[in-house]
Length: 210
Length: 210
DNA sequence: TAGATTGTTAATCGATTAACAATC
DNA sequence: TAGATTGTTAATCGATTAACAATC
Image 1: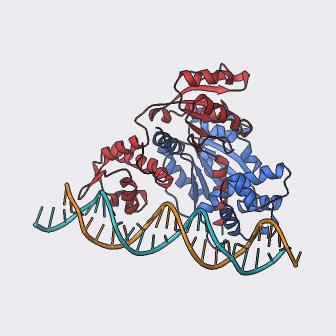
Image 2: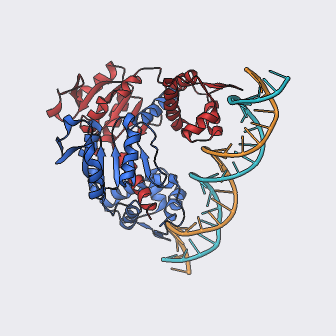
Image 3: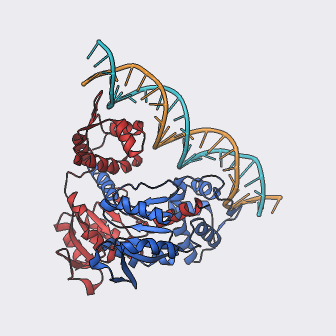
């Protein structure tokens, strides 16, 4: 599908552009130049133009970029014009928090199922979605066209569950378990290692402390 | 405190080293070479040696690295040998999930207080910690030697609350609100933008889909 | 047309990898 | 000592920034 591979450094910046452009759109701003965007986002205008040009010319010389158009194009690049069917494995506090966070749904990421290995909480409902036992996962994934699995289980079970999910046909994993998964490279994995993030903060706190 | 500034790229890798070394330690492994670590972590041995040498020589020629020693040194670099006092602002699902996640406490990050602007949930207890109204925040921060604030509130209020926190003497903010904070550069900010992370996954899913 | 601003090439900077001398 | 492996310098690679010609 892609002509040339875009670097992950660029991809990581796209959601932030998307957010700022959404805000500008909401404010009714019609056009913006790379220099103006540079001023509010605190990145160089050069980087902005380079980033956008990875995906083709979104702007117009002498004018700049049309906010709504650019916003929509970046949304498409990020796949936000399509619906994604998600399941979440692990109905603990974090899993529940994610299911309850409505903004994902607004962007087309729809939670279809919740699974947990603890029989005590199976049957419980989180926002109309019933928690199911792990045994139901295979059929559910196959019958409901699930493409993304969210892992909010302890690290001990995560590697094995990830392998199962891949065998059921899952294409991407959003991994909150504090462990590196072992899946084929064509399966996309995005790790959210909260304790790593906190440790980084801790380092920066200590090193800038005088 | 620091001689030379260490790049954030290096810092970002330290928690992962720390995790692998902890696992090796638990397995009773005494020593490891950069090459062996390279094999299990899937990064180059060269990078491992460069990374460690930013902080001085942790190894020994002909021998490698002592696992326990290296583990402890990296822990110290990350500031995990000290206790941190945290407060969390926003007692919603995500805030509750973080407070309930015991692993942070194990590493010395202690939740001392929880604040929320909704009077209806003030007084509620989350793991023995009572949710307090925002008005109590200033005194609490000053009297309890709080150094890290965790922001789990909607983006609308986040920028203002961050500024307040800074004025109360907070030194670092772990920001889960989907907005860029506007604080002096000596205040450390670590952003966890979950929707950005999910969008990145969505991009990679779409672009590797054939 | 003149002015503005992009798209894109070239230059710089920084991070990663390779190589090897130092040394345990 | 000989072998192994680090610490560190040098080479490469990739990402960011600067510059400017193209063009609206």
